[in-house]
Image 1 (cartoon, rainbow over the protein chains, first blue to last red):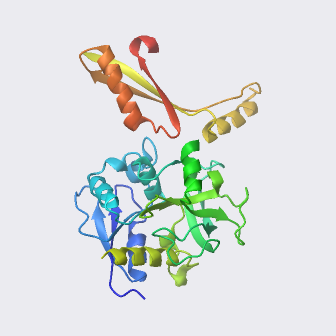
Image 2: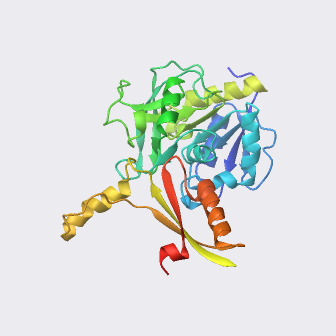
Image 3: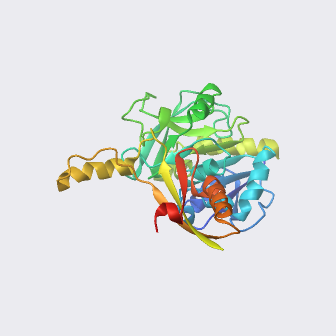
Length: 236
Length: 86
């Protein structure tokens, strides 16, 4: 059980959609959700930050490309540099890649279509703010909903990502198998999420905030929030 | 002086271009079965107020590097009015 209540900030950009679900998930899992505003230069002393899903700035130019210039992003970058936990979900992942806080980029899905369904993801490491307490190989059911989730990276970045174990989750079958069929958007190496080498910044395309309430479906997102809250609390 | 420039952004060679593939798949249905290697990019038109065309061009290249393209997935070219041909 979590002793205190870590404060987790969720940033609302113009076009964010999942900020409320993320705040609710934080609360359901025992944290204190703090709304943050893109135009503020203030992260209100939170213990962790979530960049939520949606279509910030209408996905103009490239997904996530314009959000990185929001005033609050300077604060979030400084927070991350101090070791503060920062999670990007879906559009938030795209923003972290565009901002250079994570390597790689997210491009149009292989099948060209928007995909919206539950997928299975395999945990690849327990060394990140989202996977503490999870065992590599474990399979979680979490929904995806994106048109541009195909992860790509420069060959040297990709080598580094794999060699340093920076992959947090891969799309898989129900038994953890990695194959073409279960790679929902054609991502390189079936990569669904990655972390930075320090383990305090992570991004993923699946939406754990939509999978925490047993009343409305699978709860594969719960352990990710439990990990994030524990990670944030350890810093309080 | 004001200089008109274009920044042409294209997906890196070797990177799958799903949009290009979709267009390529549609062309035979309209009777053009001899088309391959369709790739879709984007063109950004700019007017830059600068001392010289060279300065405007250098600025456009910097803007293309830092915002208009993502170096992980895209290449770009900056074209002057003369190069654009108008």
